Length: 245
Image (cartoon, rainbow, N blue to C red; front, side):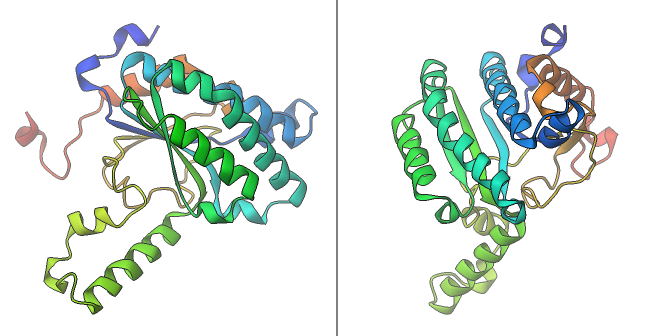
């Protein structure tokens, strides 16, 4: 059991997960892709509860990318329906586990019903303090960076910010993730080894963990294994091993 091996004093402050493999999982079993997405919601619940159980403060899930809008309409409609239904069902889990829900991305692109349900759950969990769960919805990191550049440029033009004052701190303040720490551990399921336009600025020094497990089969024990693996690594942030020790 990997949970017993985890050092609670060295937990990643922020875990981000690219939940990949729902469609392939369904195809392997002879089902429609939609069934894979439905099964994937079980993995979400277990992983969220697992993070809360061991004391992870921040978890961000890549739920729907800006590129996902180009998928077949039937699949997109299914994903939006699942989003609404999941938010309704999971508010009890979030409340019982004292978890705050937030979102990042171009939420205005979501169907009105999904927007309404999302804002309702965000509002109802706003005072929770145990963990922050962030859903990346209609999210793309390049779009986020473009938005940040435009926002800062406008403020420079209006003399609200001096060009010389623009640094990492200013940039962080203008990202969707302004209230979150940088990502310490990025997990991607399904065996694919790419970032897929996810939190490109925020993962600058993240440890990357790729697993062949398809998302519907991923459970908290797999999460604990990833965290244990993270804790075996030496994080140098550009320094030498001698400087770290």
